[in-house]
Length: 371
Ligand SMILES: *Cc1c(COP(=O)(O)O)cnc(C)c1O
Image (cartoon, rainbow, N blue to C red):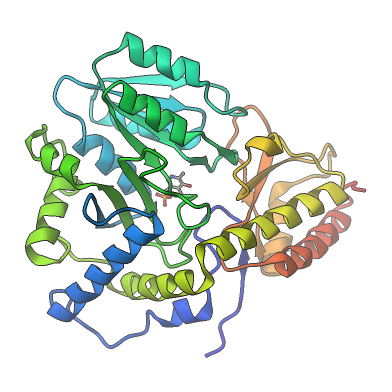
């Protein structure tokens, strides 16, 4: 089968290989068969390896849903009674965690800081000193809205110093930037299959400390479908998801993990870096500006300022690129007009070079000035 190859420069879902796409085409199977439980066991073990999580301390719990389900689950399931969440918030994805706290009427502190900067560690420490009832510190690793990489190892260390657990949203970094849950002081991290692993959407997973999940059995329950302990317990008892899993996405993810280990963590990291450098090179060559200091960029998302030209139209340029097989994505910074070019997925430097040829044609087509 010949499948058209689109280059997705949006922050996920990402471009996949044909072998991952085709891995979904399997004979029909009821996911309650032992054979399927066996597949999920291997998958959960492999996910631990991606995060360098020791299997005697950490477990991987699977859920059917997009990546946001993990944020919901961690926050609603892991907060003891009369305790607070501290969200170290420098962007849209951390704000999503704040919204989850609000939705469940949980006590929280929204420690907001500039979306253009990394959070200030002294502020985090002072907040922890002043609020001994904080039981969970939450911070997104890679703020996908801007491209800023946050110092999670240091934030995790502060959480532990003050007796709190550390939950990090690693949805747009795990499998692309090396993450080591032990060294990075992470008690819980999370991702979904369509981002770093370059599989399909619909499967999300939380990698976390088993002792804390067990302790959470006695915490107040705030959700039925998205309770971490319930899903963990069901996996322990049966090897299965409590409710219907995303069957075909699981087959794709198993294939994607094979390809992940075959490429290797370091080589994959280097490939994403190459793509990122090629994006910056193309942006510079056209005389466009980016908004985040490269020193704090993740190397996975580049936020580009709209060209200062009345002819600029994101929609028109997007549509032109889309027709030519490339997808660009709007920005997520309320104070600045940006679009994003991302280095996720099964792509490499030549794809970015090809993209900038098309992008330049688009600028010329609509008489938008550039270098
Ligand atoms: C993509 C992403 C999510 C999940 O978004 P969904 O649309 O629910 O898949 C969560 N956090 C971060 C940092 C992300 O990049």
